[in-house]
Length: 341
Image 1: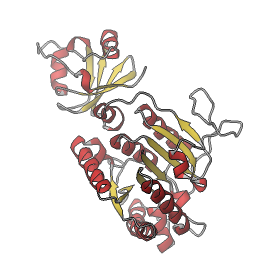
Image 2: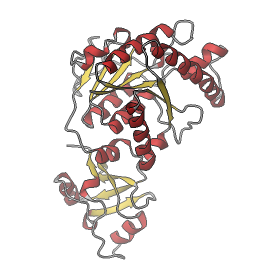
Image 3: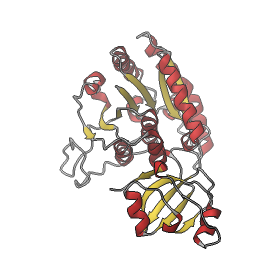
Image 4: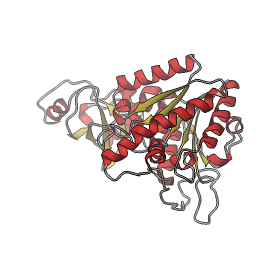
């Protein structure tokens, strides 16, 4: 089984603010056992900023100071991971990524190829956002989302979001065993060290499940990875829907849209039947995009799909205005990912 596991800062930071080496050794033990049993495991790990705090005893006020803490802490974090995994005969590797690495299709494929080579060498990939360079324009934002992107790119079977809570709670304080949109969720707020809360975990888990991946939110302190991989999961499980092909999954969930195309009801019906988007169904477009960029397809203020376009925004505009004739398809059916049922 191919599994992405994500550990948040609150699991990795001890009470004194330093990285919890005992817990990382637990991670190394659990992941090593799973790998020795034939599973492919990929770690998404927070903790760089906390690692920097443990050394400098400062949380930083400015963005540049926080990024400096991450630069210092990332080395400490990886040093501890390396030492703990060595006890189990494993070599670790580090990948630091930004939003652009996922939005650009070529870069995205290159990253997946690199990770595939690490798997070939039997190395443990440890992934984090590149916080030292990430700005609002290029950052993923939180490692829950990063882990969802990664699981989609890897075509993983399972995504496990390890947290400091037992799962998603309902308003009565009970763990929801299987996620249901109709249930009212308790708002637990944000944690001390993490960049997100339960809402980002739910969003990431839903994204993965809609891409055909089983997702679980569970308590990392009670971690038994082998048991989970054998189907005995504790926490809140998000059941997968039908898995789209890799290209469509990237278009629908990972790629950054560059514009919007508004369509009529006829085009919507055709898209839902698995057909291409033709010029006749386009009402208007918004934004500046080029051939092979990703766009949102919108019908009556609702985003119904994401798609890769066969032409630029100027061509779409001129086609709608009747200045251009004979353009076959705005978006081919194979490059349209329907987002609603």
